[in-house]
Length: 243
Image 1 (cartoon, rainbow, N blue to C red):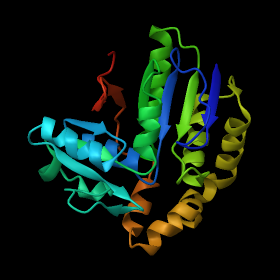
Image 2: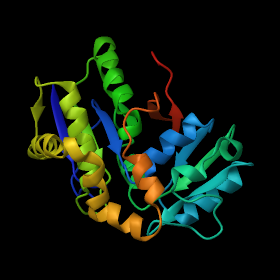
Image 3: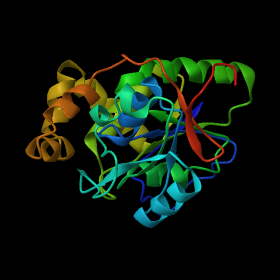
Image 4: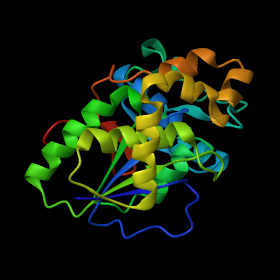
């Protein structure tokens, strides 16, 4: 199976996606936050690109909440930022959230034409891998694109390590592009000290400086939420097995 890894949401030329599964990764923090929100009862997350689009969309959806960040901080006037801990059950349970982030929501929207778009992070990694195997048994899957959101159009180590872990879990019978091979190698090197590698990354250091140490530790924790979020009709929902 062909697996191609893309480095950032700003990748200038995307591969053909319409017959592929795209897995979007934004470890710090958009996809980690989405997985957490859905686990806490959020009805759906609507990814948008701009603040203006978010505000317009809220007028169309009574009761929807606004979530997101710019430069890692909560947007003024929004209900929540981009911390998983903002999306507690009592806040998001039964609600739809309109979200805009610097990197993650851009990657999701860029991948929207794919056969399927799923959100991955360390929190739900095993569930993503298991869902890939189930999907392969049901449909003809031409390949997988792992779309790392990156950090402001730059390479992001936490996203790449997560991509490498997915590749490692999928096994050796894969055809990888160069970044996919690099991701697997980097993950193998970092595996014994994964938390430290994420904390020492540029993105990790930035969040630590801003006081988000709890977020970094949480987002680096593997396999605690058995959820496969999928983009369906423009909304990220908790995908039901067999859908």
